[in-house]
Every structure is written in C-alpha cells, then in structure tokens.
Amino acid sequence: MWSWVVDGRSIARSIKTCGLPKSNSILQIKDTVENWECPQCNFRVDNCNVSNEWPGLPVGVKFDPSDVELLEHLAAKNGVGNQKTHQYIDEFIPTLDVEEGICCKHPEDLPGSRKDGNSFHFFYRTTNAYTTGQRKRRKISAESSVRWHKTGKTKSILKNGVHIGFKKILVLNKTSNKGTKPCILNWVMHQYHLGTNEDEKDGEYVVSKIFFQAQKQQVENHANVVAGVEELDDVCNSPRTPLTNADPPRPVKTPLYEDDVNDYQVGSYIYCFTTEIQILFYNSR
Image 1 (cartoon, rainbow, N blue to C red):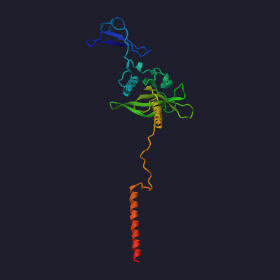
Image 2: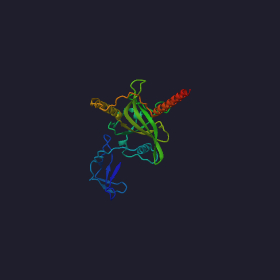
Image 3: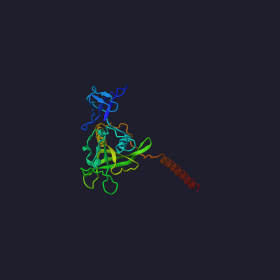
Image 4: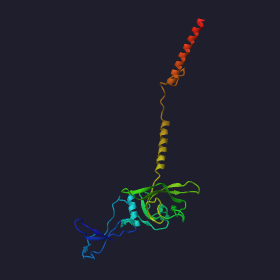
C-alpha cells in the first residue's frame, strides 16, 4: 500500500509506505528505499528527503461517525454497492471474528474499552441463540447473568431520503438471583445493520457503537436531597417574627360566600313581611 507525497503544484515527487502498526492507534509512515523506479514508465522517484515518521493526529481528534457514515462503512465491509473499505478502517472499527460476536466478552474487557464517555466500535457477525427461531444471541458468554437487552423501538436510517438500514439501542442488564428483577448497568450499545428488515440476518456483519454512561440521575437525586435538607435546616433554625396586628375573633359567624349572604337577607325580608300580615289580620278581627 503506497501513499504519494505531493507539493500542491506538480505531480508526486516522493513515496511513502502507509502500513499501520497493530499495537497502537498512532499512524506511522516509514521510508522506502531512497530511489524508487516506476515499473511502467521507469521514472525514478527521489525519496531521500522524506521524514522517518509521521507523529499522528493532533490531540482532540477522535473517530465519531454519524449513523449514516457507520452504515456506509458496514456496506463496504459487506461488499454492498459501490462502497469500498477504507484502508485504515480496521484501526478504528476492529472486527471480532468469533462465533459469539459482541457477546464474547464483557464490554469493559473488549479491546479499546473506555469509561470516559467516548465510544468505541466493532464489526461482528450476529448469530441466533437457538437452532429454531430468529432470537439473537445477547447473553455474555463469560457471565451467564449478564446480557444485552433491547430497549425502545428500532429506528430506520435514511440517506438522502432513501432507507439504508436500521439502528437498535441495547443496554446491559445483570440478574443477581433467578426470578429477581434485572439491574441495569451503565453500558449502552447502538447496533446498526443493513437492509429493509428490522431484524438482522443470521451470520451477517453488523456494526456497533459502545459507550459507558454514568448514572447522572442518581447523582442529581442525591444533590436534590442534600439541598432539600439544607433548606429545611435553614427554615427550622431561622427566628420567627411575632404577629403584632392579629385580628380578634368575631363573635358572630360570618357567611363564607356572597350567595349565602344574599339568601340570609332575602329570608329575613320574607319573615318580616309575613309577621306584619299576621298582625294586621288579628287587629282587623
């Protein structure tokens, strides 16, 4: 694999090899021989002034592809369409060539695993959990009580309005005792597969993005409880101001609503009117 060095105004003047070491993710470029001759045109390339190593990418640059870009890498991996596999893709998305796929190890034991919030990616083949049915293998092989559990709906991925694949979100669960409710761990996985079927095919390559998600909700709840206790202490310890203009209790109960007042007044008028009629009646006799 060769890479030409171009000065921007003319054709390539030097050539470097672009092999990538498997031990780390730093890209290095080594020199070839000082003079190289093209086998077709016999043009000799001067390679004596090429630096020995390229130090790599600057700090802060990271591999963070979008959903569509991940499916494009997956299409190249599966040889679908005109997509071609990038020459460095194995350094950023390694392939797990084992029968268990992503379930061969706990996420924290996978190569490149991290807990700083950044994600890491893998190619692997999905397999069915049983000989009958389409249920996929989700249980971690090394730990029978830990398995990936799908959550939410399967999301369609579109590229320029055209459907190209699906995305599933899975969380890692652990069951302490048989029959008890599983405990949700902090590991989250986004799994992508090609096609128009919501379920991936047995044995086909998929690509996953895995990351460690801290329990922010528990931290927030703890902070709210602490703040509430401090506020309650402030209220209890603060001095109280005595009531200086308190109204004395009234001897007569006041009606609560205006309608009750109106009904009370109307009833009094009717009673007085009836009494006057009775007095007039007895005097006329």
